[in-house]
Length: 424
Ligand SMILES: [Zn+2]
Image 1 (cartoon, helix red, strand yellow):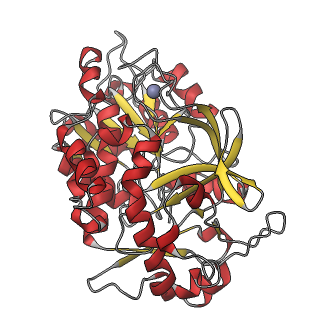
Image 2 (cartoon, protein in one colour):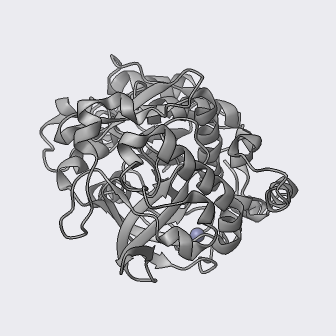
């Protein structure tokens, strides 16, 4: 694990990042595919003012607007019929782009695309793709899931983007990570590859492995970082539904066989434990998980990353041990721009504009570096509150901090907690 005195190494804007900026602004790069997928690991994305980032992203936002109109006409044709992508140059122009909602929202006068996507999921695949794709579903709790089609290059962009969070959690090449996610979900696949790219050893949980097997693997392979999910909060007794292995279940088994498993996830009598850091998936770390951390884990640091089948990463908290004075712990998350543009917005006249500090708004994102399913200002149903403006977090990461991310539709809440990020 990275030590606290190495934190500052993460806060620089790399020369490679400045070079990309220079080449974009000079018109040398005009297509997102000219930006290498590996570039999304650069911390410059999190250390640069949004105004500047926007100027870097706008050629590609325009590029995707054009593609959305022509290659996903069933979804965007109607919404964008009066929009000429060439005229979208400034942030003010961008705010006039309508938000895409899954369901009709009478209050906002927005028409949803759920029915079109349910009837014919293939319309979510852009017609201009040449290469192979894989669709990942999301939001299945209210009927059929909506697919996001992903190419190999898209995957690479996202797994490198996610690595910035691994850095903020202090995970290095010397660490060994075990995760309990379902590997058929996008998050479950991306975690494996992202850590391999990061240079960390990674262990998967086979679907038939129970908590004892997971704990034994942690011992046998010297695992020191655990990635797991939270328990279903409304139905604690319904463990079967919870894919079997989650933080609660791992603690329960450790307590049941203390002679075997003390000192692994839960501390031994001298306060030592093998697991140094825990990533809890889902869109929030629930109060019960924080109770477990305090009462059974002797304060093992915990953080989370916001991501979904549609877009990884969106935001993340940091390892509190590395920067105790940061205000981006647990459910306070730094926005992560690149390969997506993440915004928290409110309706103002006929535009969708950024919320002010302290305000709640819709979390939306635009997949500007993506060959597959193009999401333009897509609102999957999450709301968030802006906690800190950019440059305000004492940790030194420049991007704004959001908090209290939650689903507008509470029915999807449990599914996300149980399956982790990118629940399918
Ligand atoms: Zn921070």
